[in-house]
Image 1 (cartoon, rainbow, N blue to C red):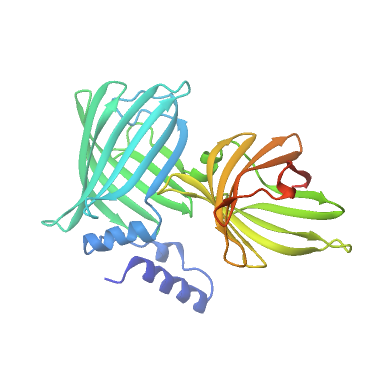
Image 2 (cartoon, rainbow, N blue to C red):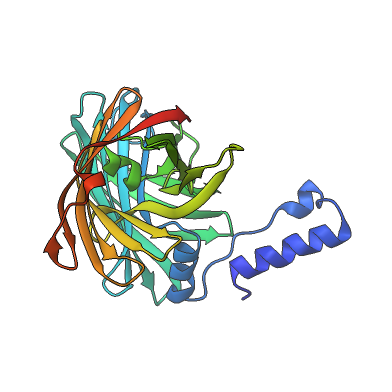
Length: 341
């Protein structure tokens, strides 16, 4: 079978060559099933379906164990475990006050007999146990459909769950009764942005300028990659208003070390790597280490505090070639004023 991701590219190219889109009837493409577990997990990995996801909304009556009409916040983690032999989703629902409404887990494995992914789920809805199991109906490049039989509150019923890819960092899940009864449950997911979470409300973005004895030093900090990193451009403001760039940097979240990192490279070849040691809405402290253009080791802790539209940066624990040394320019706080967003 042609891999789904490759086939979708071929189909798109054919549409472009012949011009226009096919008729609605011709556009209906029956769902396929993966030829192997490796093909299915490649589909998940390549499609970006793993990771942490969040959603909010109102429950419906599609389940017997979770009442309808409750406003909730949802969070889930989808991972490949057991050396890639299982896909596991763990999740929680909480109400507006943070009270736990539902929690559970779901495991997907390969059924060698039927040649189909199977899944089993279980959990507690407000103290009431439930469980379900079933198998994949099929998938295509944009969605996956599973059919499961769920038991809860003394009742058993069949559910159809459709998981759709709606964007790079968005997904939609629809859970409905196969008999058409009750109200389908629709969730709009967003990939959890751990970088923004780790920043704890700290927003470094903007154009900041620092007057150093008549020379205006500028720092342009912008969100990038759908707010999953921050890019930094630094330089000197020239008389004509242009920027003579002297360095560039990027700041991001390292999920393995569970820390915010920053890397800076200057036009002379200085390289500094930073790691956040504390972050709050109006303060961030970062420990830097690296080398200058001559290859001499540098290190420092920079603590930046925001006061209205100004950033006050102080330097501490500075070392040069392994020896404690604080240059004159770093002995007093450096103040950068907000020029614009």
